[in-house]
Image (tube, rainbow, N blue to C red; front, side, top):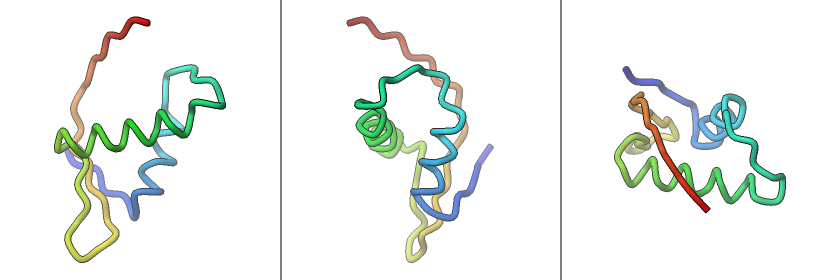
Amino acid sequence: MLFYYESIESFRNTTKSINPFQIPDILREEFFDDYIEMATNMGLVKKAVGSSVVKMKYNLIVVFGRK
């Protein structure tokens, strides 16, 4: 399933609105920067050539982390 966004900022705002994690305000922007970078590196988010349109391939991602 593919989702299309008008821009990377639109994608970021949508992701922020459905984010299930409780992230301290001071770390929130850094988290979303890292999230978008990782999703791009994994090929889940791609920017259309010659356009600001961003497409995201939907996959279920389960991440386990420990401090």
